[in-house]
Length: 331
Image (cartoon, rainbow, N blue to C red; front, side, top):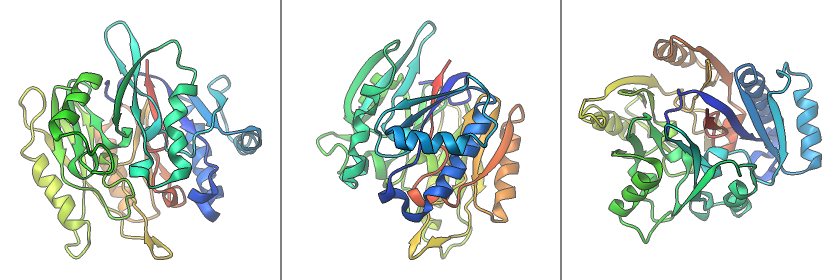
């Protein structure tokens, strides 16, 4: 599995449409999507899934107001359940001569959402026949892992070892499947995720590789916040972890945004849910003072890319953000 900063052929996305996910936040989610797609098409192709002709017409109307680079947006009519293609879509792998993809089982975060289970069928319907396919046969979501592209993968115990994913498998058996299907030699385990995350702790809200030996990880400075202890535990573990060469990781920190709520539900907002694409890094921001600190940190990590903040206060209502809503296809 290549690192996200390696050259990409395309980014796959699914247009938001499920009223059960969005309630009255759909227009806000669509606005974020238009901005994301407009920026990405300046740098690479975007393949966009829509469930039917009605949603296609709505998406095309919204996108007509944006500056989409001609030829860099292709729309495919495929039912997906909703936008989180990172979790139900193909996970691409490559070697020196070939790109292929792995298909994992998707059970809507431990069978939490019946209307999202259709996501498991999406890779079967995507136009991927040019690629060799490998079926892993176990439950795993793309947002639960992050890789450095040279053999090291990071994940969380709270998600991958959750009894609602693969209760019949041991930790060692899960590790072996990851090694077999993603070409991994070194697996690093963090503890748990952030408040409000319905995935039981996806790592792409916590800790991300920014180069082969460097990670950024979110930390909470307020010791009265529910995120304080788990995020401190994750940071502590990271500082003793090593990459596949046996070299200690370089650990940088990102702030957590101040807690914000819609009704009585805390939003699982994190700056770690950024997407690295060709020439650009798209970062979720939340109209908070900490936005600037997060963007500045990531600008130092990616001096050769433009780092752009996208207002995700509406998108986060659907329990995810930019990284969750995208899946890169390597070049």
